[in-house]
Image (cartoon, rainbow, N blue to C red; front, top):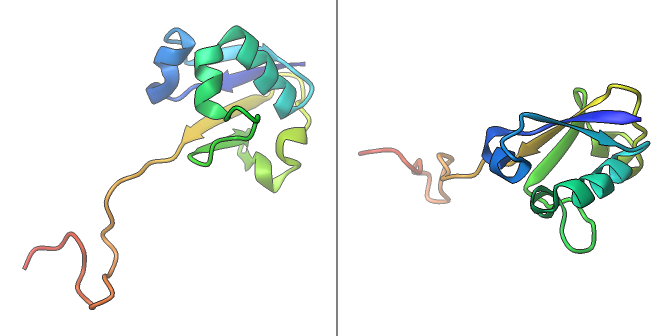
Length: 106
């Protein structure tokens, strides 16, 4: 099966500037294995040296998080789109333990 791996803007430099890559595999894990051969710099941003998806990366097969499906064993259907979504981090605007609101101005 060929999956379309959708690359976010922040990772496109590691994919030769591509928005989308056509990668072969019958499961998500196989797609990532083939991605490692074809685009090793990108693959290192997605999985660690043990092959575990990095905690700051989410993978969606169409609209479903793969970890809500069968994880890396999730089967790929012809033409499926695997979306790479990096976590967005930053400061907190939540409440502090003293009741004040972080990030607010007096």
